[in-house]
Amino acid sequence: MALAALRGQLASQCDAIVKGAPARCETLLKTRQAVEASRPAAESLEIPQPIQQAFDLLDAEVHAVSRDLRDIGAYIRLHVPVHEDGNNFYVDMQEGIAKLCDDAASKVAELADVRVTYLEKRADIKEKISPSV
Image: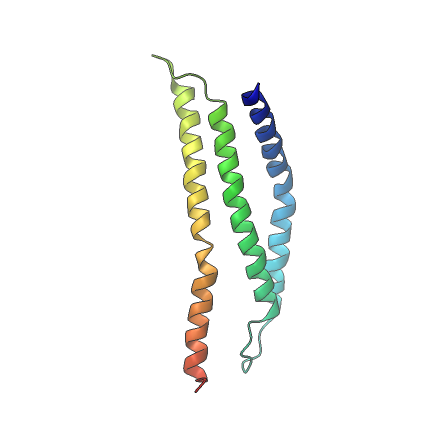
């Protein structure tokens, strides 16, 4: 019973992930266009607002996508039949797809470090240009 409830919950989550994907993509594209449309002033020492908003959105999306991929992998694993002797092609395929989901989730989670790297490099350049004494 508990396993059936978990399968149902994961099925609902996976449906929501798939149905919400177009809206998420649209939001990312609008953010990209806003970043491309704005050019920071050369003398500005602050992070431009569109870039700050883009980083905030991307950070949230990176964590959400990583979580979503792990949920999809769990959903697939809960539907893998028993591995028996012979004729296991589809079982192996499902396990392979679940592993791909987990690997992709790990890679996407690594993207969260990009923001920190950007801010560190920006701080170094800013310090070289105008030392803070």
